[in-house]
Amino acid sequence: MSKSAPREIELKLRLTPEEMEAALAGSALLALREEPRRRRLRTVYWDTADAALSRNGMALRIRDLGDARVQTLKAARDAASALLDVLEDEQPIAADRPNLDRIRDRNLRAAAAGAIGRRRLRPVFETDIDRREWTLSGEGGSTLFLAADKGTIRSGERISPICELEIEIREGSPADVFALARDVLGDQPLRLETRTKAERGFHLAAGRDITAPTAPETARLPGLTAGMTVEEGLRAALRSCLRQIAVNALACRENGDAEGPHQLRVGLRRLRSVLRIFRPVSDGDGARHLAAEAAWLAGEAGPARDLHVFGAEIVVPARALDPEAPDGQTGYDRLEAARSIAAEAAHARLAAALDDPRTPALILGLGIYAEGAGWRAEPDAPEDRAAACEADLAHFASGALDRLWRKVDKRARHLADLDEAERHELRKSLKKLRYGADLFAPLFPAKRVRTWVKSLKTLQDVFGYLNDVAVARALLADLAPPDSADGTLSRTHGLVLGVHAGRADAAWSEAQSRWRRLARTKPFWD
Image (cartoon, rainbow, N blue to C red; front, side):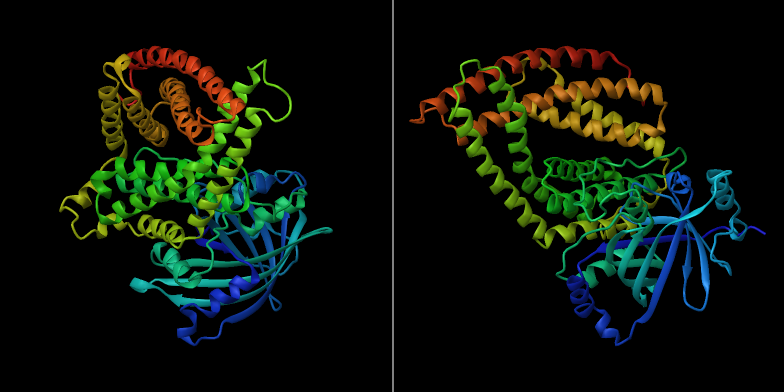
């Protein structure tokens, strides 16, 4: 007889051993005066030689509890969320090898068997965890499970440490997961771990360093589907923003890659756009607070990104075109030295913002708002908000995209006469339209979406370059003032501006041509 597998929804927090003990000692757990249950968990993960289960988003394990063994098959559900959301089939087993017949969920059993085919299963890696666990009650009668795990992942001779908190919702709203994380962490840093132990184990088995700094991550757009309600679409979009913000905030802490500040800023801008697009539902103090905090953090990340673009995409191309640049200490070298000092200060500014309590409050507050449907709890919510939440998402998307398009069309009138400030406002409107188009794309015919979005993207890229040139003029005035006593620096200032002034004129002509082409293209939502 088949039984549907339950969902496991949890949040993982990565800490150092010292941070974990400080969090547990200073949290609300002390008020419970409840000793944790302690267990040692030895677990072996199985897969085929070519990782067929892992490639299909599944993990098969056997856990030795000392007096019993448990076989578990997990299948990931939502890759665009900061929460780990999986289907889980867990059954007792006597043997120390997997038995697919023990999987009671028919769909999971068929998926695993189909992925494995005729291949043989083999042990790939194992974990050895000392766990302390608590069962807690959240607000509104929810039941939460908190586990503090310390141990190792081992694959052959490779070994890597584990130190993390898991917060799982057993009953109630996932919003309580974020609320408990806020209470437990206190002043400890927030590092959301978006990888399961299984994912890290397979990476280790493949020879990758799973303790390497977190890499920047582009947006994982939610897979919106026909038949969704507006509320479901809003929640999925907010989950996607939360993941991009949380992962890239961590990447900025751990990784010097310039893409980190860029993707963090994109995630924050996407959040503000989503709240604006869904304003008929999300309007309220909670949404306005999140948008204001996102604007603050994006402003703190901006200078680091701008200074990178200035060096790599403005100065370097200009230097390559200068046949008279002398060897040695040229104006370019002095400009780069000044840019490097400014960039170091910008990264320090961003690091301070990430250490500010406002940043974890934003991330966890967004989780509470998204998972707890904070828009419904607004004290000034209109009477028809419930009806707006339950409305058809595809119909809403058409109207939302049409509103975004009309704003772009209005700003683009008399395009040839726009001054720099007006071009900047048009660029921002195009960006908001792009965020909306990317978000709602799955609700419309793929071919029409692809053609239209391609035209929008090329136009947006041209406006992006024009904005980079405008920002570069301001940075040059700060880093290499033209009236400087240093003649080589003054010469560099003029040449960089000259190169990009010519390119900007050509780009502006191209922008006008591309706009006329886009304006003649029928929108995919129409």
